[in-house]
Image (cartoon, rainbow, N blue to C red; front, side, top):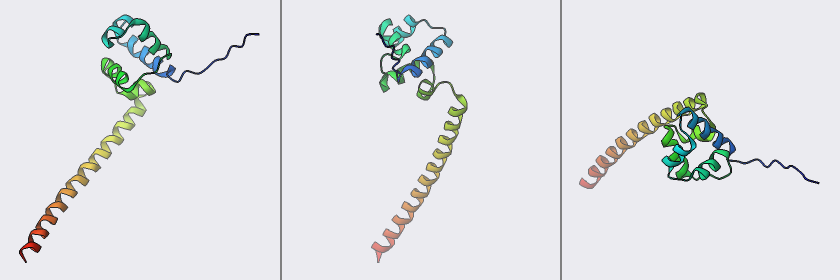
Length: 119
């Protein structure tokens, strides 16, 4: 008796996203593989989710298609990506404000130290 066991491949979704991006860019698998400096079979394994994608390869693929790593990992869910970008911008503003406050406090601390050292 033969059992057909469907083992989920964790990289399948990323591979599907890469395939969509490649097709959107009108690249063949051979062209994409050449840009990545890998063989066509190696690229096919990435697209089908057979092989894992390490972070440096993920960044390289994202750069080729001009997208964020999150687009490859999560798909072209721009609504979510826009939310993430907006939150990142909000947090960056908060960090800048706190950095400015730290600089002001350091200035005050230096003045106090100078005053104490003169007495």
